[in-house]
Image (cartoon, rainbow, N blue to C red; front, side, top):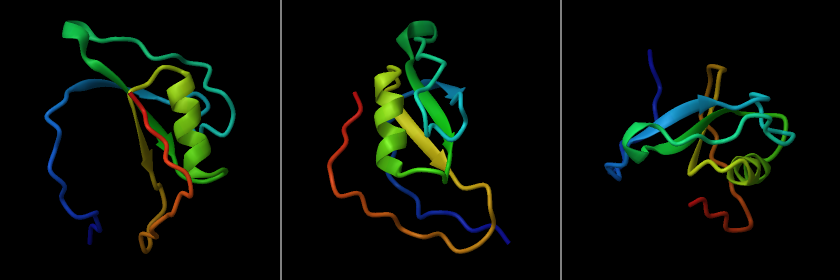
Length: 90
């Protein structure tokens, strides 16, 4: 059985997805955002765990990515996370 988050309305924005290096983004990313064809937005894929969501997003932002997608590679119940400060990318 596949558990997934509820559907959300998409922004319609297309982009180029890069894998974070290091994949957990708990230290500064060694790869930087690159614009794709037709000025597509740069997005980064980050694995969950190791440090806070805020730290992951801030490191993605510092590397020039417009959005960070944090994924969970373990089965189980999805746990909501609360970040105490607002982080804006882009």
